[in-house]
Image (cartoon, rainbow, N blue to C red):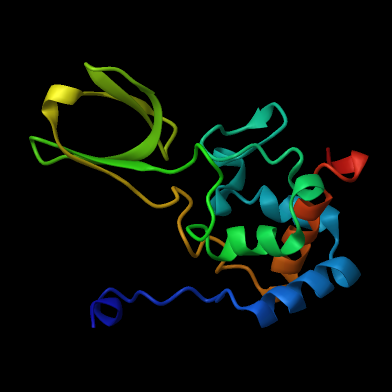
Length: 173
Protein backbone atom coordinates (compact mmCIF):
# COMPACT_ATOMS: atom_id res chain seq x y z
CA UNK A 1 0.00 0.00 0.00
CA UNK A 2 2.75 2.47 0.90
CA UNK A 3 4.55 1.61 -2.34
CA UNK A 4 1.40 2.30 -4.36
CA UNK A 5 0.73 5.61 -2.64
CA UNK A 6 4.33 6.74 -3.04
CA UNK A 7 4.43 5.38 -6.59
CA UNK A 8 7.34 3.20 -5.51
CA UNK A 9 8.06 -0.10 -7.17
CA UNK A 10 10.17 -3.06 -6.29
CA UNK A 11 13.57 -3.16 -7.93
CA UNK A 12 13.19 -3.91 -11.61
CA UNK A 13 16.16 -6.28 -11.65
CA UNK A 14 15.78 -9.24 -9.30
CA UNK A 15 18.91 -11.17 -8.39
CA UNK A 16 18.35 -14.80 -9.38
CA UNK A 17 20.81 -17.52 -10.40
CA UNK A 18 19.14 -17.64 -13.83
CA UNK A 19 19.58 -13.90 -14.38
CA UNK A 20 23.21 -14.08 -13.25
CA UNK A 21 23.91 -16.89 -15.70
CA UNK A 22 22.20 -14.99 -18.53
CA UNK A 23 23.95 -11.67 -17.81
CA UNK A 24 27.33 -13.37 -17.39
CA UNK A 25 27.03 -15.06 -20.78
CA UNK A 26 25.71 -11.93 -22.52
CA UNK A 27 28.46 -9.78 -20.99
CA UNK A 28 31.08 -12.24 -22.25
CA UNK A 29 29.64 -12.57 -25.76
CA UNK A 30 27.88 -9.25 -26.46
CA UNK A 31 29.11 -6.79 -23.85
CA UNK A 32 31.10 -3.78 -25.01
CA UNK A 33 33.40 -2.47 -22.27
CA UNK A 34 33.72 0.95 -23.95
CA UNK A 35 29.94 1.39 -23.88
CA UNK A 36 29.94 0.02 -20.33
CA UNK A 37 32.41 2.71 -19.27
CA UNK A 38 30.10 5.38 -20.68
CA UNK A 39 27.22 3.89 -18.70
CA UNK A 40 29.41 3.80 -15.57
CA UNK A 41 29.97 7.54 -15.98
CA UNK A 42 26.25 8.46 -16.26
CA UNK A 43 25.74 11.04 -13.51
CA UNK A 44 22.36 9.70 -12.38
CA UNK A 45 23.87 6.29 -11.59
CA UNK A 46 26.40 7.97 -9.26
CA UNK A 47 29.03 5.25 -9.81
CA UNK A 48 31.86 7.76 -10.21
CA UNK A 49 30.69 9.82 -7.25
CA UNK A 50 31.13 6.90 -4.85
CA UNK A 51 33.70 4.60 -6.46
CA UNK A 52 37.21 5.34 -7.64
CA UNK A 53 39.04 3.47 -10.35
CA UNK A 54 42.62 3.93 -9.24
CA UNK A 55 43.13 7.52 -8.09
CA UNK A 56 40.07 8.98 -9.90
CA UNK A 57 36.59 9.03 -8.38
CA UNK A 58 34.83 8.92 -5.05
CA UNK A 59 36.05 7.31 -1.86
CA UNK A 60 32.72 6.25 -0.36
CA UNK A 61 32.62 2.80 -1.97
CA UNK A 62 35.40 0.34 -2.70
CA UNK A 63 38.00 1.24 -5.31
CA UNK A 64 37.18 -0.74 -8.45
CA UNK A 65 40.63 -0.64 -10.07
CA UNK A 66 41.12 -4.42 -9.89
CA UNK A 67 37.49 -5.56 -9.61
CA UNK A 68 37.42 -7.75 -12.72
CA UNK A 69 40.76 -9.32 -11.91
CA UNK A 70 39.78 -10.23 -8.35
CA UNK A 71 36.03 -10.90 -8.57
CA UNK A 72 33.96 -13.32 -10.59
CA UNK A 73 31.21 -11.92 -12.84
CA UNK A 74 28.49 -13.39 -10.61
CA UNK A 75 29.85 -11.43 -7.61
CA UNK A 76 29.90 -8.23 -9.68
CA UNK A 77 26.33 -8.78 -10.87
CA UNK A 78 25.15 -9.52 -7.33
CA UNK A 79 26.84 -6.34 -6.10
CA UNK A 80 24.92 -4.33 -8.70
CA UNK A 81 21.53 -5.95 -8.17
CA UNK A 82 21.64 -6.69 -4.43
CA UNK A 83 24.26 -4.42 -2.83
CA UNK A 84 23.37 -5.52 0.72
CA UNK A 85 23.98 -9.21 -0.01
CA UNK A 86 27.77 -9.14 0.35
CA UNK A 87 29.61 -6.07 1.51
CA UNK A 88 33.33 -5.58 1.30
CA UNK A 89 35.00 -5.35 4.68
CA UNK A 90 35.23 -1.77 5.89
CA UNK A 91 32.17 -0.65 3.94
CA UNK A 92 29.45 -1.61 6.44
CA UNK A 93 27.51 1.53 7.26
CA UNK A 94 26.85 2.82 10.74
CA UNK A 95 23.51 4.36 11.70
CA UNK A 96 23.60 6.87 14.53
CA UNK A 97 20.60 8.52 16.15
CA UNK A 98 21.48 11.58 18.19
CA UNK A 99 19.68 12.77 21.30
CA UNK A 100 18.06 15.54 19.25
CA UNK A 101 16.47 12.97 16.89
CA UNK A 102 18.87 13.35 13.95
CA UNK A 103 19.69 10.09 12.14
CA UNK A 104 23.01 9.86 10.31
CA UNK A 105 24.15 6.98 8.13
CA UNK A 106 27.70 6.70 6.87
CA UNK A 107 31.00 4.89 6.95
CA UNK A 108 32.95 5.13 10.17
CA UNK A 109 36.26 6.85 9.46
CA UNK A 110 37.48 7.16 13.04
CA UNK A 111 36.26 6.58 16.58
CA UNK A 112 37.47 7.84 19.91
CA UNK A 113 35.87 8.00 23.34
CA UNK A 114 34.77 11.55 22.52
CA UNK A 115 33.48 11.28 18.94
CA UNK A 116 32.74 9.20 15.87
CA UNK A 117 33.64 10.54 12.45
CA UNK A 118 31.34 9.44 9.61
CA UNK A 119 31.71 9.75 5.86
CA UNK A 120 28.20 10.32 4.51
CA UNK A 121 26.93 9.16 1.12
CA UNK A 122 27.05 12.74 -0.20
CA UNK A 123 30.80 12.89 0.52
CA UNK A 124 30.56 15.08 3.61
CA UNK A 125 32.37 14.11 6.78
CA UNK A 126 30.62 14.72 10.10
CA UNK A 127 31.84 14.33 13.65
CA UNK A 128 29.30 13.16 16.22
CA UNK A 129 30.03 13.60 19.89
CA UNK A 130 29.61 10.25 21.67
CA UNK A 131 27.83 12.08 24.48
CA UNK A 132 25.05 13.05 22.03
CA UNK A 133 24.45 9.52 20.69
CA UNK A 134 21.09 8.04 21.66
CA UNK A 135 21.40 4.83 19.60
CA UNK A 136 23.91 3.26 17.26
CA UNK A 137 23.74 0.18 15.03
CA UNK A 138 25.27 -1.35 11.94
CA UNK A 139 23.40 -0.49 8.77
CA UNK A 140 23.16 -1.76 5.25
CA UNK A 141 25.26 -0.90 2.24
CA UNK A 142 25.41 2.79 1.46
CA UNK A 143 24.87 1.79 -2.17
CA UNK A 144 21.10 1.84 -2.53
CA UNK A 145 19.36 -1.10 -4.15
CA UNK A 146 17.84 -0.27 -7.50
CA UNK A 147 20.52 2.06 -8.85
CA UNK A 148 20.76 0.06 -12.07
CA UNK A 149 16.99 -0.30 -12.46
CA UNK A 150 16.91 2.47 -15.05
CA UNK A 151 19.20 0.44 -17.31
CA UNK A 152 17.81 -1.87 -19.96
CA UNK A 153 19.30 -5.34 -20.32
CA UNK A 154 21.81 -4.36 -23.02
CA UNK A 155 23.08 -1.41 -20.96
CA UNK A 156 23.43 -3.64 -17.91
CA UNK A 157 25.34 -6.19 -20.02
CA UNK A 158 27.75 -3.46 -21.20
CA UNK A 159 28.24 -2.20 -17.63
CA UNK A 160 28.96 -5.71 -16.36
CA UNK A 161 31.46 -6.25 -19.19
CA UNK A 162 33.25 -2.99 -18.32
CA UNK A 163 33.43 -3.89 -14.64
CA UNK A 164 34.76 -7.38 -15.43
CA UNK A 165 37.54 -5.84 -17.53
CA UNK A 166 38.83 -3.67 -14.65
CA UNK A 167 42.14 -5.12 -13.50
CA UNK A 168 42.26 -7.63 -16.38
CA UNK A 169 42.46 -5.48 -19.48
CA UNK A 170 45.17 -2.78 -19.53
CA UNK A 171 42.81 -0.48 -21.47
CA UNK A 172 40.52 -0.43 -18.40
CA UNK A 173 43.03 -0.41 -15.60
